[in-house]
Image 1 (tube, rainbow, N blue to C red):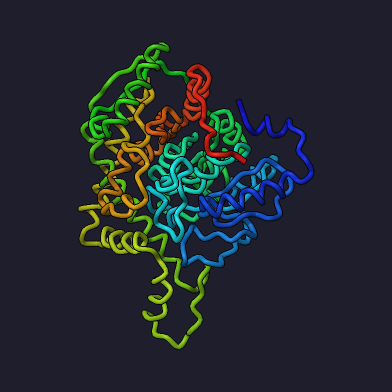
Image 2: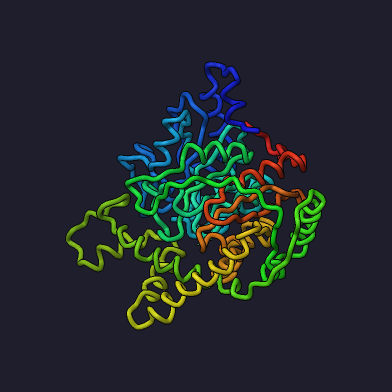
Length: 448
Ligand code: GLN
């Protein structure tokens, strides 16, 4: 089932888009899903774009004060491809600053979870998930470095798809960590994801890591649970996950448990690599070229740049300091190079498992926390919440997060990981999950 095709078949009243914008503006005051709304949208299937992906002529800040006022003179390749094919940009969605976070709270006005406004929407693609949750005819273009599509998708009860690294051009993305960043999608059905993927993948001369391959629609009967991850899931999520596994077994899937002790290094390895890369990527924001401008040229060199860089949020500053340290000549081999080697070991171990199976886990180990609670987490507590989404992201493997359950009225997500380029196999699994298990999205939140 695809909402895109349903929408295209429907006769729309002449004032459809102006009504949509009006209602959305009202809702946005409550949920803060969008940083910018495109008041000129007048045709096409509405897509929202995470605010770290450039859209020509539309303010793009990655939810950072340092990029306030930056209007890109070009659009990201993925946006150009979608616009050519009948999709129109409805606006730019809220996020953790530069993608740094798991709860959508590292920004000026955090997005709220539509299922419970006191709770976080998940991050870093918070606004993308909220927009997908509150709008029926809409899909979101988002980005994941270590789980930023899956986490908010699961907290907001929508489908989140993170493709194999390199499948979608990153040209026009404001990089967080280049060896990890993937552009992907959120939608209300796996069918919509299939459609969006078919219009977006393919090599792009502007991104040398982009690839052109034939995607395999592989079917696998075996699904594997990794013991070390399973052990760290909250009790209520575990119960719900176990019942999803039973449903799959009853449908003929073979569920197997394996132990991969090295998986426990995924989170520290990911944060070492991502911080090192982030610290170099943030070096270009100086108050000189993009966004915020400092124009008092009477200042000393250090004073000048410090003033602009004060605009970075706390997590960005942490990444600059730690990332720069990690890359330093005296400790480089101790942290960064070692992390790269362990990343390879984890990738090899997971690849072996993925030879003949998909890997399965809940998407997040907890239910969406209250915003107040999330604000009180230490950095390490924050990072450890990514334990289920980081392993596939670290290795560039595709994942799909599917809505699977509700606990106390809050959505729970199920995450499937496939091998490299098995993207379509995951989408087929999602379609099967939605069809044969008659999973119904809950539209109890007033859709547009
Ligand atoms: N929470 C993770 C981080 O802060 C993932 C973020 C992302 O995927 N952009 O790095």
